[in-house]
Image (cartoon, rainbow, N blue to C red; front, side, top):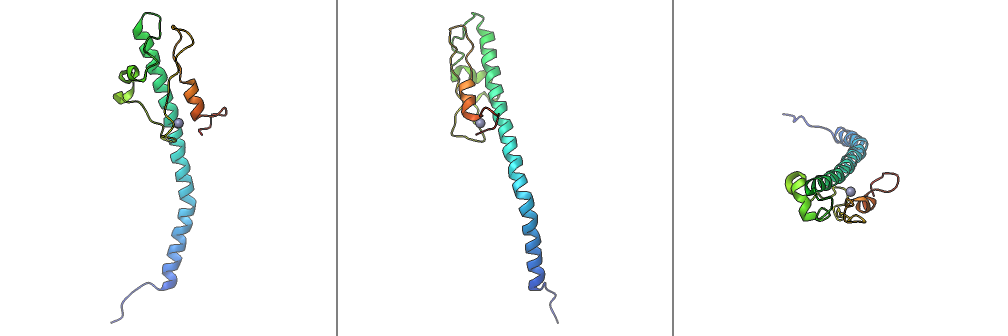
Length: 122
Ligand SMILES: [Zn+2]
């Protein structure tokens, strides 16, 4: 009794077709993942900025007393944890104190370490 099987050429054609499909899909999938991660990084900055604003609003003494400290902002952040950039996990988010006691701390310096002037994530 003869066994039904694929010929070598048929198997090679299937492998080549799968390879061509992967060649088209993998780069766009990687680009989509990067775009999502960049948007997540941007959202992390917005979360920290609003945490600073909420901290300042609760102080009610007109100063930024403690609102520049990472530990004091955790209660205002989602999950109570300091976020980590999904694109460059080694580059931590930092908060810079304002120029005066009453000035709101900012993430501007830290943002510059993540996004260049064109808004592209580094
Ligand atoms: Zn980032």
